[in-house]
Length: 430
Ligand code: GLY
Ligand code: MN
Ligand code: MN
Image (cartoon, rainbow, N blue to C red; front, side):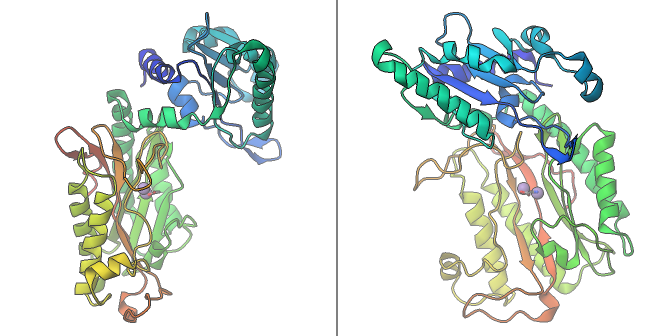
């Protein structure tokens, strides 16, 4: 659990960067499933990171320069009749005591109260998202401030996206965040184990999916993303989520599934033969992906450029494909001309945290990759995908049929530490 002090520290760090600026973060909207039924609500990650407040129709304002109120919340007011249908609402009073805001107003009073927090700021920080009506409202407030500037001599002169201030913070995980991620990992480890025990010829992909998601639910978790349970050639479809095919003798099964526990995610992929036995070709490709992954993980170190583990994975994969005769030519040329891409078309990882593809930049400048630092969490997930329809790059050999229909990915969650790294997901066998 993330305690109130940590939320306060997160806000203080943001506000130190805001200076005379004002930042506005809206909650996520409710998404309609059909007619008058909504999807389960999931809070916007930035909003949640800063407040821990888990309700829609809310806005957080940060105004460190304001005389009285630095952290302001606008929330749904209590409404017993509505709550009978859709559940508990915190309301204005409790939001102030429970979430540490200096002032809380009903969301319907945004137009009335927002101006005082904007008027003396020198810059507005707001992310223009999908909520068009809010976008227009915020623009309107800013334009009114601009119109008053000549007379007042103060006011926000521009609008910036707050992600540049906030996301570097989110990239470094605290001890409390890592505890939640470790819990999500533990649940996912159990789910992968149970899935492996269940998978055999005649079982449907969705039955394996059910076992995984039952395990998540039993531990109070949900799926971090739609589970990928891909037998045989389905493993070549990167985001295969139909999960509706029967597993056959001789199939490899690619499972990419992770739990989300109290908003923090795990992201794990394993590929294994459902009858315990791999063909020669399956084994050769599996060993190659595993070798690439192990070498790539070694590159996940504080001080290294973000891209190094990807480059290492590509290098090992290409050399292996050359050795197997599935590519031909010069290693460096193949990499420079991306002739390996029919086999390996995605990058080797991403930041992980509150979002599965977590917030944060991968590049420091146009030329320079971000530098890994202790507390960063990345996935390392090389793969090889020889789909039945794969077309080799120009000048490359045809793929014999026995290699086709094999899709393999191995994915672990790797924490950058002061002395190296820790593979959080090591308990799922490879
Ligand atoms: N499961 C999504 C990903 O691995 O990025
Ligand atoms: Mn994944
Ligand atoms: Mn991933």
